[in-house]
Structure formats: C-alpha cells, structure tokens
Image 1 (tube, rainbow, N blue to C red):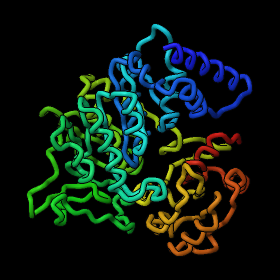
Image 2 (cartoon, rainbow, N blue to C red):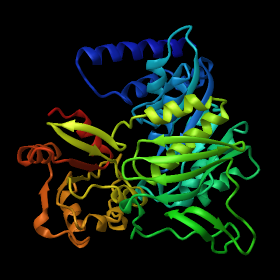
Image 3 (cartoon, helix red, strand yellow):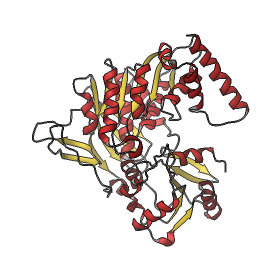
Image 4 (cartoon, helix red, strand yellow):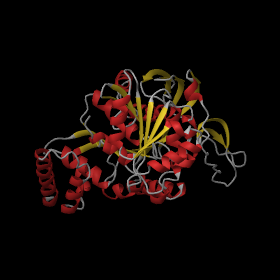
Length: 441
C-alpha cells in the first residue's frame, strides 16, 4: 500500500508540473509512471469503486463508454471514466491516478479497454460487466486475424468468472462469448431509412463467417458487414433473442430508436449520424437498464450526449462548420464514408504510426468509392500519396484531388479559400486525430 500511495502522490505532482508547463499530453505518461512505482497499482484501485463496467471491441468503444458514462453521471452518480480513449493499461492507470482521492468512493467506473490489453487489465482488476461492441478486421500488424482478437477477449472473460456480459446479438463472433455465461444481448430488429445516403450499400469486402460447426451462416437481414440476423441450417446455431431490441428510423443527421426492454417500449432520439452509432447507443442503453437506471435519465443522457474526440465530433474551425470522424479499418471507414456530405470540402488524413497500425492496406478494402462525386478532396498525413492513389482508383477525378502532407496546412488552405457557409469534413486516422486536437486556428 505504501507504493500505491507513493504512486498516487507522484501522479499528482507530475500532473501539476505538466499543467504549469502547459503540456497537453499525458494520457499515458502518468499511467506509465505509476505502474513503474507500483506494478500492482490497478489492483488497489478497485476498493475505490462500487461497480465497474468495462467496454471493448473493434469499433465504438469510445462512443459507447462515453455515452454510458454520461447517462450514469446524469443519474447523480460519481463516475470515473477514461474520457480521452486512452485504453491500454497505462491509460487506465492514468485515469485512476488522477481521479482517485483519499476517502472518495466512485459509484461506477466505466473503463474503455483495448481488446489486446483486456486480459492484462483483468490480471489486476475484476470488473462486474463487460460490454463487447463488435469484432472487425483491424490493424493486422498488431492484432492479426479476427480469431486472434477473439481469443484475447475470450482469455480475459475466462479470467473473470463473475462477469456479466453485455453482447451485440447481431455480431456472430461476439455472441460466441455468451456460451454458458451470464449474458445480456442487444440488437437491431428492423431499420427504416429516411436517408438515401445512409441506405447506400457498401462496396467494401464483407468477411465471410462460418458457424462454429464449420458450415456457412445465412442471413435473413444484414445491416452492414456481418451485423444482422443470422442462422446455421446445419446445426441450428442462430442469433440469440435480444433482451434489448432496437427498432430504428435512420435520418441524415439523427436516428429515432424504439427500444423494447422487459416487454416495455421506450423511445429515444440519438443526435449522432449512422447506423454504427445506433449500435453504440443500444449497447449503452442495455447496460444502463441492466444497472437499474430509470428510463427518463437514460433518455436525457442519450438525447443530450455530444460526441467527443473525433467520433462524429462537430466543431467550428475559422468560422466553418466542421465534422471530424475517425477512420481506422475497412468496416468502420466504409460506414463513416456513407454519411459524408459530398458538398463539403473533405480532408482524408492518414498516418501510419504505431497507434494507427503500420499496415495501411485497409484503405483498399474501404469504400472510398462513396466519395467519387465529392466536390473536392485533400489527401493529407504521412501517407497522403497513398490516399491520393486510392481516391484516384475509387473514381475521384484527379483534378479534384489535392495532396498536402501537413495536416494543419491542409486545413488552413481550406479556410483561406473557402467561401462563407462552406463546410469541412475531416476523416483522420488515430494519430492524425491527436494532431488535430492540439491545433489552434
């Protein structure tokens, strides 16, 4: 315990010094420091929290955990949450190191966790809930194939026998985690489209999944990628009946969600674009209901939530409405590309730093063909030239493609030439997003 308190004190000092020096980083540095001082730091943190909810999966972790944390906070709960999406061990340690105060208890901890680090987190920290959003191919150089990512999560689940799982029923890979476990399922029953853009079918390659028995899965409904209503005619394996059922009306700038929970109907308006964000909201709603949160509080939380940190984040940059949407893998990028305003100026900023994944072959599996009728596009970031080539082969006229590796310069160039009322859409990879968040205009 002496090391634990020494680590806490050290964290406060480092944070104070960084604030004096106006250093804006530190989402992992402080966590790295406390783990050096006290390797079992996370084990001691659990006594400060009454109930812990972990969130993992390929896409939607930050939005789902952020929305859930927002709902719980509206319910007058003390919540600790890694708001900036730093989801490796150092990021989680950073969250606790800066949040914990002597004699203060938190009602909830909502912890976003990287899939590969979840099993390491559970070596030190037992959670009450694990919410799994989806499993898509992502950063092959880090995670390998989907079976490898699934094994990371399964190993973590096996370490924590008391977990209640909250699983996406529409993802056949995710539902496998619920076998012989206490699981709550959420899923979409039906979608009505009131947006021609969002209804577009993606030309991105879809993973072909076989059932655990080895035979193909067939779909009655398929919403995107492998998400849908599936079954195996050979062994009878099928999508589980969701405990939290969503009936969706999808518009250009929002969604209406009717939820059935315990045979009762509840209605929500989600002010985030895209069907992928509906899944994020359903996961958060299911978890909130499972924790006994009142409908009116959940409704207020869903309808007042504002996305952060590049997840459909809306800003005004130099007087122009700007939408920033992170893209990082084929399925996520393809769904985001469906929602892009083709009349806006578009900047696609792709880096290949470690946190992005060195392998950028995912650009060729992403449906950039959705942008072929765009007004103008700038390819930016470390891999700007690769982006430009991909856009050319997607059918974007060469004269509409500009190349500017410097992301800040690309944004400033738009602001310099843009007319009043013109909008900007930025589609960055992860470290490009970090760069943008630090920029001043």
